[in-house]
Length: 297
Image 1 (cartoon, rainbow, N blue to C red):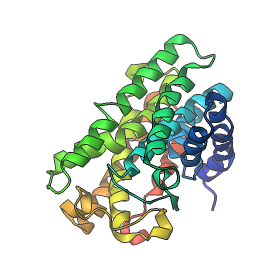
Image 2 (image 1 turned 90 degrees about the vertical axis):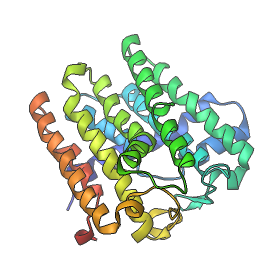
Image 3 (image 1 turned 180 degrees about the vertical axis):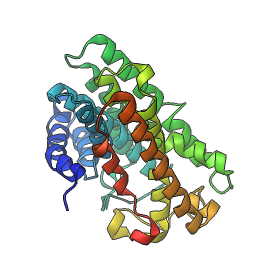
Image 4 (image 1 turned 135 degrees about the horizontal axis):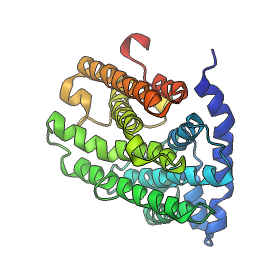
């Protein structure tokens, strides 16, 4: 049965893909670099992050034009850069991503590194090379820099490397995942609030939703590494034996319990956001359907 989200995805994923397929080449002038950048960006994926930004805008009642769409897609460039670098031999050394050879397998480690290096600044370019007002451009750029940088995603990646083979506490694991995975998901919602011109004092409940959604996303990803298949998730499974994950720390049953509670917390935050902003949050609530609990599988 179609949901608001499935209808929203049918409308917006083709438009997101069109931006990502046609706009990157306009800003590059080296053939192989362009191919490497576009290879990973257009290798598939749920487009979850730009969809979250667009869903916030839609929930706020904003009309989404080309400028807002492209600014929302900037995050997908940053996300793709992080995946390319995560897969490199010096980091996770993965050969498969979204069911296809990883960037360094296809183009070599050097060109893959440069593809990521190219996508990161291009994300910031897409936030400012437009007709948005300068205050909005600046706020988006600062928020993304913080989310992707050494107090956000990169911090989490560093913890992931440094503490591999050691056992973090639950608080330490939450910090790692809040930065490595959660920071860009939080930014996806924050970007919608910035573009929707919601004052900071009114953003709290939706940002809490974003934080809880990001936490649930990583718990679920950890669970899938144990119970999923390569065909289902598009990358090798059972890769996390020496890593800090929820199943490794808590066991599978407790991980499912934590997933269930975290999703409930995200949904509660949406109820509060609906009241605070006087909006319908049912579209955003549909995003929580991504997570399947044990009895739903």
